Image 1 (cartoon, one colour):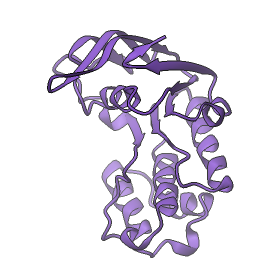
Image 2 (spheres, one colour; image 1 turned 90 degrees about the vertical axis):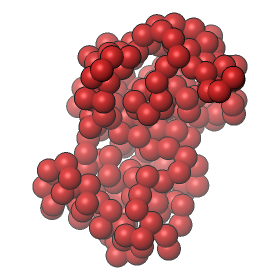
Image 3 (cartoon, rainbow, N blue to C red; image 1 turned 180 degrees about the horizontal axis):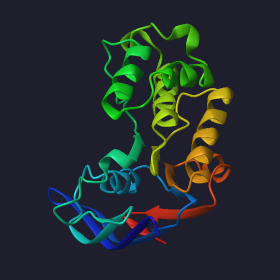
Image 4 (spheres, one colour; image 1 turned 45 degrees about the vertical axis):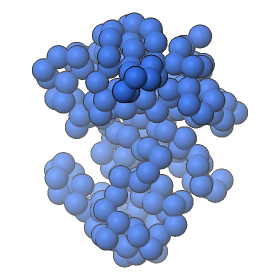
Length: 209
């Protein structure tokens, strides 16, 4: 298993967000985490991404115990596309990807390749702050196609995307799972996530049912 959660709880301030969450995700599998707004889906993704510690339970991701001292060791193997684009707004779309390629050791030629794949070759020199939300989302898809993470986390990935970009989300998920990684896709829209996942898990009021 690439993901193993047992009895995971999360509390932010005095508010309980997750309670006794159990979840297994195998290599090559894409799992949908669906439920209403406020159910705790984003919190699960943040715990898996090493951005938020759990309050209780055990969390194993890519063979690493995220409750231990080495919890950040796997961060470089995890890709996350969240609600807010994780991009440098003052840099161009191309420069954002070039920076990631430089930091991670990816061959620079991959930048133009993924820009072509996601349909941004003609807008590559546009600053992110002058790009639409849909363009920013395409840039993040390009980044993850370039990095090929072992664990892909997507939070409401279809927001602000047209039909051609929706197909890119499916392509990204398939590329990760085909390489032996896994994906967790959080959404309130079950119809959309059913199309690109192998299994669906319902999260309501912080509990998986």
